[in-house]
Length: 235
Image 1 (cartoon, one colour):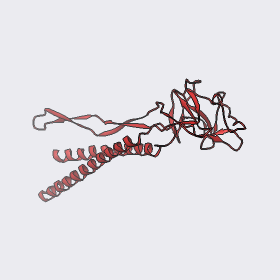
Image 2: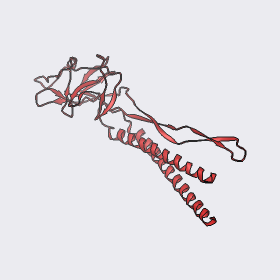
Image 3: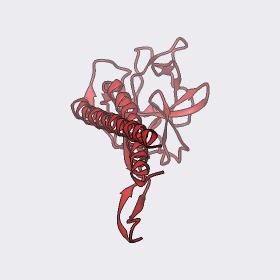
Image 4: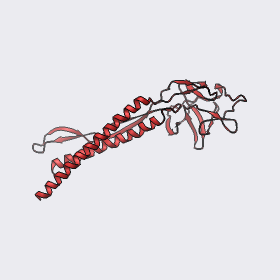
């Protein structure tokens, strides 16, 4: 295969890998935007990096004349777990954690942790989340709602989960190591960690990167087609 053709095919691979990485970033950005108003939601950050570099050699002299990237890839996805601002509400069973820690809920899959505090009274008069899962107290037992439709802040558990990792639906998996330092505030919820305006800007920048990759692939593909046609005519 001629060196020029090999270079073009390498260019196709690099452009395609870049598009794949940006498409993964688009999924993350879209999820963040969908949760821009979800109480206690924690946004993600996708880090895109290179597979590495390949040395470029002058075929005539055998000397190394530079390097090219081997393509892009998603290096890691990191969740921003920093507490967000609290917002006052008129709902007595809305709760938020000021500072560090997580609420614990009992789901069909086991205990999960969350920063979302849109709670309500269940059919058995226990405190439940929006999915109907029971919210747990410091002793990891369900919490009863008072006759006046309230729950004292002290009745709600705040757990330290140092290895928290996302488990879907604003839940986190992890091993609670005891009580954390956060304080429960009633009649309030924690804002979403998504900055909608900034996230839209990120989405547009990512879309432009995908479009650039598509144009590069189209250009290289056309050039390869022409090269193959010339090669066939010469043969």
